[in-house]
Image (tube, rainbow, N blue to C red; front, side, top):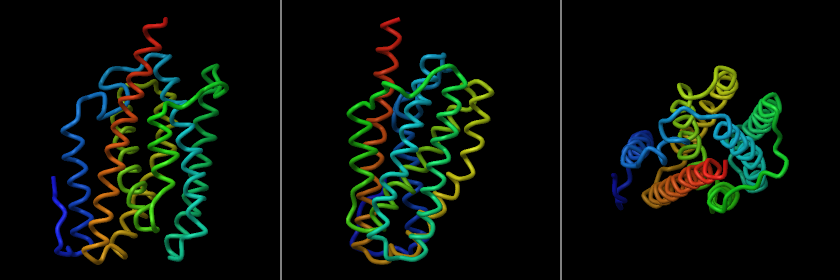
Length: 223
């Protein structure tokens, strides 16, 4: 794991170092934290639970990114985030429609406290665009792609098609985070703040995935 330093790195090298650090941190976790549902195929109840979480996450992403806009002076970030909000809303609709095609709805679904702390509270925070985007569009969106890739062999074909509709947009969101870091993470202080936010986001992500595992284990025990 990289350590914070008072020396400034070239921004592109700094970004690559962040991504490498995330990979190392993730490899150090157990299976339940690496990907939703560990490495097992998802049964119907577990699949629906993940889809409901994902639907909720997409809507929350539209909400908290929208809350950043009034305080986003950087034009390229503002325009990119407006596109991302539209993407998140479309993803929410796609996933919700898939849930309904499986004979279920979002009615009555309540997020775990770890989900709220991670998604609703932490991602909505941050002192400036650089902190907000680095937490979500680096840690968060790379984590989403990691989860999708881990889930693809373990879910039904119809759900794979849903994920395939979403993944190209996630790649754009990651690219937006990379662009913002390249352009604005240009001082030692900014790089230290970015690294801190990325690490905090990763730790909350892992707690959220473990909360998912706890929840589906409880569902299985109740059957």
